[in-house]
Length: 292
Ligand SMILES: C[S@@+](CC[C@H](N)C(=O)[O-])C[C@H]1O[C@@H](n2cnc3c(N)ncnc32)[C@H](O)[C@@H]1O
Image 1: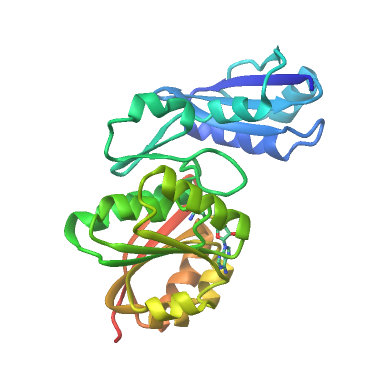
Image 2: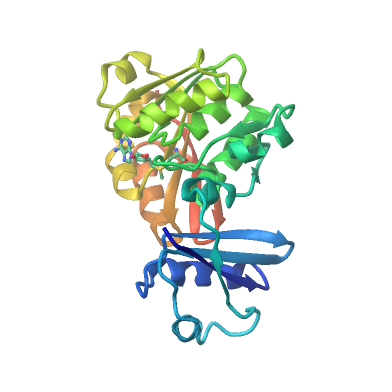
């Protein structure tokens, strides 16, 4: 398959993000993949891959109006190679809180690093490159500085990145992880083995709390849930019942303007907001269960 790479340098993240969003949404031709990553602070690079050559004029028109701080687009044909390997190699390691998340192509660099988590980009969500995941990793890092958790749930685990991070940060904790997508739970189990935490991370396929294993395992003292506001709001009462008193819920996957509704719903169920962190238009909430 022919492959073309479009590369655009941006002065900073605020300039790079709308370029990546526009290229991802554009359909002339549709991009196979779009990556945004830091080159050298504060410069960012957007790379988009295509199976048909896009027109540079059309790209220029698309980005017209984004203003200063944009390098000219550079288009090149990529030599015939393994596309999956290529897209994975395009993901640089990221650091979020106390964790570093990297792909197999960077394994040698982080082999001795206790806080490194290896996750391959694939069919399940959660390589750490999305702000919703990074905000959870940062919230977890912050929480374990002052609190101990023995019983953790990662609800909507995707690759199981948060469950693995919890197992790493809390060596005595039991971690349960769940997802309503059986492909994700299979990938999550592989990742738990790869990261040598499979003995402490159990993963089940379930929607919300609807699984006997999740009911039996309650109460949790920490729930990490990076799922969208709709399911988070629908699950608020069950979340409170699933948590011990003074247990903590970290909720992510919210856009800035969705925070208020989620906070109000959780307050009405007896949660107190400890922290709200934001990145790139996304927000994560750390909430304390004040009821028994
Ligand atoms: C945004 S991804 C988060 C993955 C990972 N936890 C992370 O932080 O990167 C959301 C995941 O939740 C799963 N999911 C969405 N709604 C769910 C629900 N009601 N119950 C269980 N899993 C759900 C999706 O299948 C998806 O894998």
